[in-house]
Amino acid sequence: MLKLPIYLDNNATTPMDPRVFEAMTPYFLEDFGNAASRNHPFGWKAEEAVDYAREQVAKLIGADPKEIIFTSGATEADNLGIKGVFEMYAQKGNHIITATTEHKAVLDTCKHIEKLGGEVTYLQVKPDGMIDLAALEAAIKPTTILISLMWANNEIGTVLPMKEISAIAKKHGVLLFTDATQVVGKIPVNVNADGIDLMAFSAHKMYGPKGVGALYVRRKNPRVKVTAQIDGGGHERGMRSGTLNVPGIVGFGKACEIAMQDMAEDTARISIMRDKLETELMKLEEAYINGSTSSRLPHVTNISFKHVEGEGLLMGFNKNIALSSGSACTSASLEPSYVLKALGLGDDLAHSSLRFGLGRFTTDEQIDYTIKAISDTVIRLREMSPLWEMYKEGIDLNSIEWAAH
Ligand SMILES: *Cc1c(COP(=O)(O)O)cnc(C)c1O
Image 1 (tube, rainbow, N blue to C red):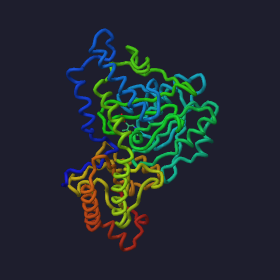
Image 2: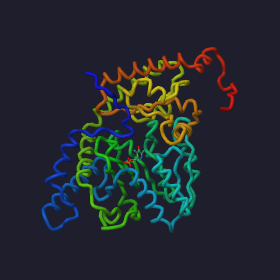
Image 3: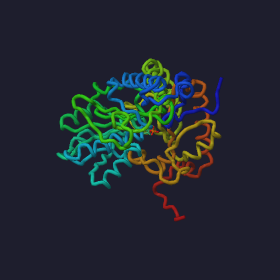
Image 4: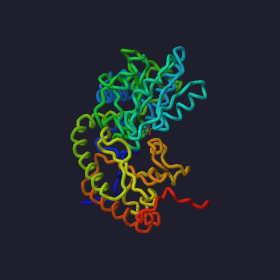
């Protein structure tokens, strides 16, 4: 049975798994205690629930529970990880290396650090979204304290080789922070095997609730420290004050437990659907996959349909399919996706892109519907498009001088 509208925007947020919701419910009503209340059973029960969730979260990433700091999400964890290292290691240096395709939570944090007197190198990426590792190593200087590179990109799903990046960081005694929001719960992560020093992730991108996430901070080999960015009651070992979001944390823990248990099966099923979707859509003329196809998340594909405008496409199938476009005409800016532009795409291809993020609850029927709806819409819009007509007549569209306004 086909369920409409179809949700294929799982990189923006995921629906909550009913098992997560069920685990959370008692902590809204009867078990409402403050996990920091030491004098009565209400507090003890809440603290116990948080401790258990901390173990579930740590286990998924191969960490020690003491290395998990709960935050309000990945944005806060990005801020705490990067600003916290910048302040804590000020004696050692002030230089941070990141990349132009990072999430805004990292890029804007780095811009803030530049205003505070920090120096930031923004690495360009290759046309497939990967980092040139030689360029990364060449960018390291004696003042470099941190490399901040996202594990997988939220727009194109490109997965960076974290082990190799970590080896470079270690060789030069530089800490490695990664925004792993799109990765944790989707592909295996082990902070020790992968050599991660600090890592941000979020519950609502892995079938947990919104408003809760974590920063992993390594405690051994080396012992990493961050300065608090929120001061107060000294929660989370003084690194993040504020009364803990107990139901959210319980849900986050449950989401991690489910991810561990279901990851292999979910990935096998979802990647088959993704591959089918991609193969069928690539049968359209002038369709291009954005980002690496060899090092990529199993549930993501980002495709540009040349000479069709992304927003127009989204309207074309009547909001029956929830998707994201690299064309940002609905947002405040008219600029297309900076990630796609960083890959070297022109405005035309960036504007004509769609990001497909499949998920645990995506069905075969939904994928079949999507393939047909998108194929039909692309063909129909192109039939009405003078640009497409010129393209078919062999006119080089780049040679045309467009009249101003
Ligand atoms: C969603 C996302 C964030 C922001 O996470 P929140 O928990 O919503 O703050 C940060 N980085 C990446 C890569 C993301 O995909």
